[in-house]
Image (cartoon, rainbow, N blue to C red; front, side, top):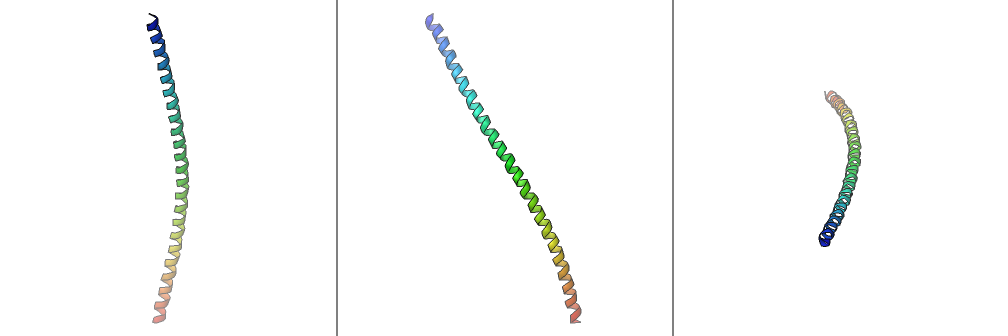
Length: 84
């Protein structure tokens, strides 16, 4: 009878220790996941800023290209007129 009660108590304590360790590991995993998610948020924000800068550079390049094309067209017309 004492052995049975002792066995139940030991089983209960063992189960409690295992449960506590699993809860701790789960908490550690949640902490790691939260850190990874936060890092991903920061990286996405950084990438969005980079994309915005690239779009601005493309827009500036388009404007410069348009002005260059107009200048070339005018130069071509002057050259053609001078050859006549």
